[in-house]
Length: 594
Ligand code: DGT
Ligand code: CA
Ligand code: CA
Ligand code: ZN
Image (cartoon, rainbow, N blue to C red; front, side, top):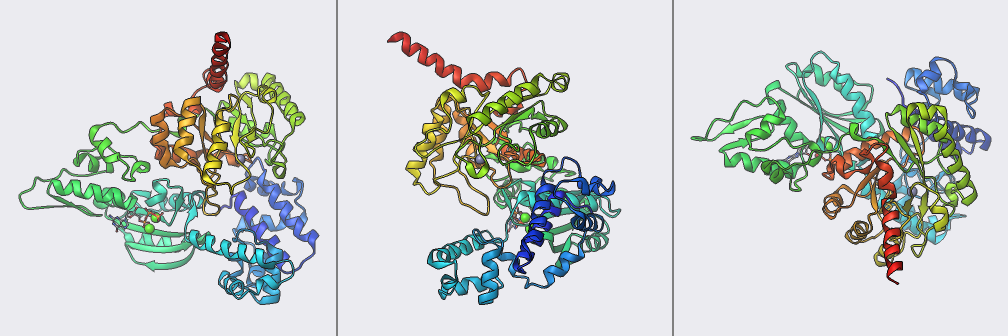
């Protein structure tokens, strides 16, 4: 079993947290957090570094940690970590998931009040005892109760990247098993929902016991909840639950449609089947007396066809008009990964990214992209090391230089110079018009003042959108999935303003955001607003998040014509310049009338 660097880094972070709880020496703790950080910015697979004995060459990774990471990568397990974990109550890890609660506070709660779980903490807060601890107070106590409430609200759901890693591994191992015939992911994961309750996997087999036996003994499985020949349920690493169904080959298309859902979509299909005198369940059609015989169904496409429908891509199966469109033959030709030509909104070490400009560029080339837009933070985002005018100018110069380099000239690759410009309190921008005009494009985002009311926030954003230099609106609602709610904003009003001004709206493809939400894209499209899929990448790996963005764009019924970064070099430049030149022209007309 191979470990991804993200996972190794996560374990190192956990070790640092536990050492802090133990009151260990700060240098030792820092060694682990630094190593975790260093792993985030690798530009080659960690397995390679381990295999070639080159881990120690990385800055921030010493001898002791090299040994531990090697053990973890080669065996999939780290004894030191397991022992460390065993010395704490299991519930303590959940405390780290609470917003605003770090190791120092957890240590105080644990050592002084015996808190070893979220339930303990809730009780202590309600009794008013947390407020009495040094460094806590009433305000902290209230915040903790709110954090507990938020945490409970999100319990049992997962961001899609967590599930995707597990799904990829499980599906490929199952696929390789002799007794497995057809296999597919199902449920909300197949529909690419923004968060996932549990992972559903469907297999066809004539030897179901062998498949289920293999499944429940898979190394990713931590706990078996239900085990039967055709239906098993387990808890995987990270607490993700996974259901496996094994059906007979002839049942597979029926089961696949059923377990892909959504439930609402299934209900519509069932009633269409009933209109034809067939009752549809997860295994087959049952024909009513006197009704026509249904055709033989060998795959999903034939099942939809038998109901008078075009094949409906899983992402659209949300009962949002897809059945009517499939009947009328007007389903959109959804965007695909291979349509993407480039992307905007990426960070580098100049602000809070972990990889350099050239590393990000080469990663984009490796991904098959023709161009990459760099949009580091602007100066007001000081916590993210935002660039001031001078540093921005230096970066722009560096980008122009790279574009002129032999490497880029020969590969035909191009960097675009941009910024992720903060939208300040009143909707003002963080850079002057003159500075913004030196850039190829501008992403505008809100990073502060989240507590404003809906009217204030909407006005603030619309004011920024009306600015001629703003090319695209970044992560519109500021939500962090399963962690921080969206700030209140009138989305239809923002869409209207974007349509009027020719401002592009982003699908932020980070699995933490997936913002603007897929449910709004049909409206945006109707109004003529264009989409850009941006990874908001802070590392070379972050560029891969574009895959999640494609899923969301598909859920939003978007085609390649709706998404500007499907345009190749030679065409994309005009789109980036369109809003500026339009407004300059309008100004020109006004001036000549004066
Ligand atoms: P999740 O796991 O909460 O993110 O969402 P799903 O959609 O994956 O839901 P899940 O895992 O409970 O069930 C998988 C699929 O099975 C679901 O999308 C549709 C189908 N299904 C489950 N229960 C029912 C039901 O009571 N009626 C119908 N028609 N379909 C169901
Ligand atoms: Ca599910
Ligand atoms: Ca399920
Ligand atoms: Zn941002």
